[in-house]
Amino acid sequence: DHFEQLFGTPTGVDACYAVQMYGGQYHHVEDWDQFRAQVKHGMDVGALHVVEVRTTREENVRMHRELWMQLAGIQE
Image (cartoon, rainbow, N blue to C red; front, side, top):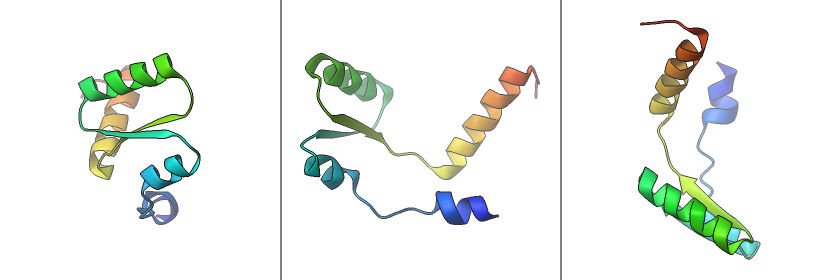
């Protein structure tokens, strides 16, 4: 019950401004191809690069449960 209240609540913080405050480059991506391209770009260029991937809480929970079940060898 307390996890959602403490960690699951949106902060309302736009990461872009925090990254810019430290002289970094911010990139918001919508898919895996964009993610790979921005991570590669950040590694090639160096310095501070932040790649933001926005997700939904429900999808995260579902995906984590599936991964844990796979790791534990449990079949649905």
